[in-house]
Image 1 (cartoon, one colour):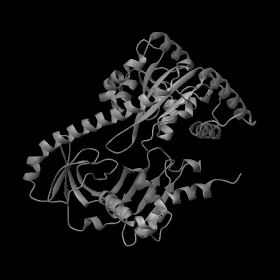
Image 2: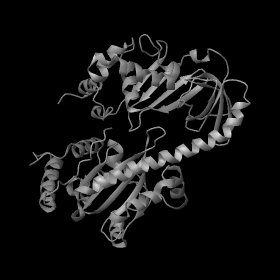
Image 3: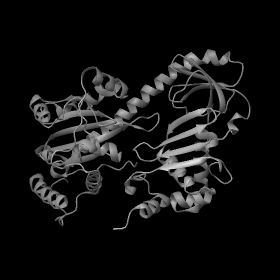
Image 4: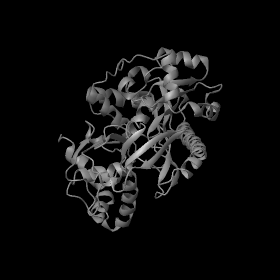
Amino acid sequence: MTDTMPEPAVAAGEDPRRYAQLLSSVYDAVMTGARPPARPREIVADSWRRLQRIGINPDHGATARPVSGDELDELRKASGLAEVYDGISHALESITADTENILVVADRAGRVLWRAGPSPVLTHADRLGFILGANWSESTVGTNAIGTALVSRRSVQIFSAEHYVRTHHAWTCAGAPVRDPRDGRVLGAIDVSGPARTVHPTTIALVDAVAKLTESQLREVHRKSLDRLRAVAAPVLAKSGGPALAIDAHGWVAAVEGIAPQNRLALPDQLTAGQTWLPALGLCVCEPIPGGWLVRPAREGAQDIQPTSVDIDLRTNSPQLTVAGPCGNWTTTLTPRHAEILYILATHRAGCTARQLAEHLFGDPSRAVTVRAELLRLRRHLGAVVLGQPYRFDPGAHVAVQIPDDPAQLLPASIAPAVVLAKTELTPAG
């Protein structure tokens, strides 16, 4: 993910009405298989291809039951966005108050959790089914700023006939994903929508900025929670009588005693009291403490226990690594770079030197020092999952890679030569 400014749907100085007419001609041609008078924007074309591939009907989309009442309340609590919604609403008040725009915040599945805006526009949105609890994912309502931002992990503005479902052509929307600073997963999306005539090139920049501000607020919330855990853990660690550390429920380290400092541990799917195997430390004893866990290594050399199977799931916007070991399974979310490295190692089971990995990642073997630093971080987090000299998975472990049905969506933001080549080789001819 880069920090480049997001692309507006309508360039400054462009006549929105004339451009909407062109988009309508482009849309009709693409949907009927004719030659379009112009190419749709890349992010829109990618979305349309995805939706054609899964068979979404451009006349009415797909059907999904809206949630409401207690179920909606539970989704809000589970979203990770409830603590920052007021800040989002305040930051975008100027663009929704006394205008024809509405603010929408959705969760990672595209379900509408909150809405705000003038009553006439909300009523118009109601007629589209753009209501609280509605599913606004791409696979339900086609190309739109919420669903497409969640799939692409990019801020995106959609205007008029760029929407895949015809009934949405009278609208424009600008959406940006919000990432969890603890693990990089997308928590949901912020969206500003309104009638197509309200389109403006600055809207997407504002929504993108608010999403980044929201991530900063979430980072501060997390910092304060670690501070509270640290205060609780300090006297416990002082009395532990041996190596130990205190972590939160996501594996972030709040305090450490007698163990090499590290930022985060990969945890099992469900951490429970008692013995468990952690990839960075080996066999450990875990005890719950207020706000987190006390973790103590059980014995020396336990980190040498090797995993029996490794599953790398690259089919979603948040790549996941699931490992089965001698003491159960655990799953962790991968950073984009670590996902690239593990994909390369999975397709090169004999292993890669630092120079070879630099060639695969950057097309430049001289960047071996950068690779070694990245592998140091990866192995500190994942421990025995990746061996060294050369870097590789354990030969006895079963390694599986789950890739998207559309090879073009394999690590979509990656420009690593090995990934780009794989996309080409996996894409069917013609």
